[in-house]
Image (cartoon, rainbow, N blue to C red; front, side):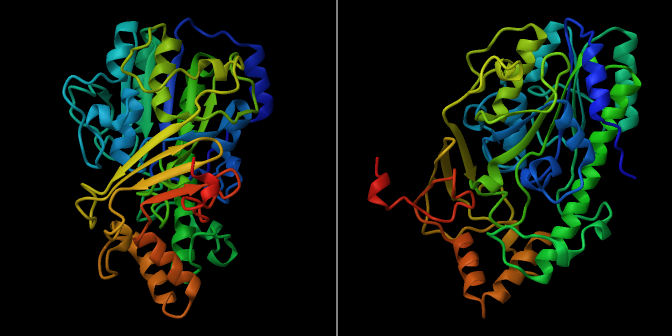
Length: 422
């Protein structure tokens, strides 16, 4: 049953009774393979009342991006504030170089307990010595409850990462009846097949399931009367594992939803168009917690944006992708990108190599994502549009340039246009 405990009226009340401590708590709720444009407050089709309510109480960021469109490099990046290249954690299923510092090393000396409950996908433990509150891939809210109670009883500030495994495939949680396949709007870059619509329905149901987890975290914050003393962030990670999203450097793979509630500091219902990235999380938490910047960071604090002191943040964000370590992928297919608010440049190192991954596995396997793509292949035998979308997934030019301010599907490649040579 959906948990929806947020109202704008309560938001106003909480701000007027603000009594924040000198060291606020941090709660960071992370999805797994969720496209930001599917979330309700980003005008998506998923029913997400808890994230929508959070946005009404805080700040919604419209231009947050990540350093990689895969789980492991993304999570290493979030917790270290450094580029995956610096830490060595740039392939998927990877680990950071020994001696790398993470959020734990920065906040514990400031008096914080730093914990995680849910999916990890990070190594080694010496770099990430969290207080791990669960063994599975989803949060253990009983353990989270006990952790919060312990911190409240001992008057200890905490930093807690609640890391979900949803809506990662195979999309088997939640109530798909809420999303009749025939009534869904499909992204422009997709091929309209029954398999695509069925998978999208189940994925949206699991997105609502994730939103319930956000709600459970918010209920625990309320249970211990911590709302006014907590910086609460909900974010979507990389895009879904439908084609042209996860595992690619298109915006559908890199653009992420990012919502921050910080009563007394962040205006309720505010938005930011500033260009930010996941590497900014560590610098933000450390500044709020009373620490000093580390020169190794690639991110910088979001505090001036959150407090309304600035409207811009970065001019460019940089991202990487390698197929090394990915199931059914070539050993060598590196991709790099740089994006401003208006343009995206992509460099494909090996355009002669066929781009493949879990999405393109032959259909007689357990991987649900491939059922969708194989239905596109069948459609392409009689539909030129479907054939083009399959071909564009497998083969990319060496250089791609998109005017993303208008061409948000990244479909009109301007790399060979002399007008954009500079």
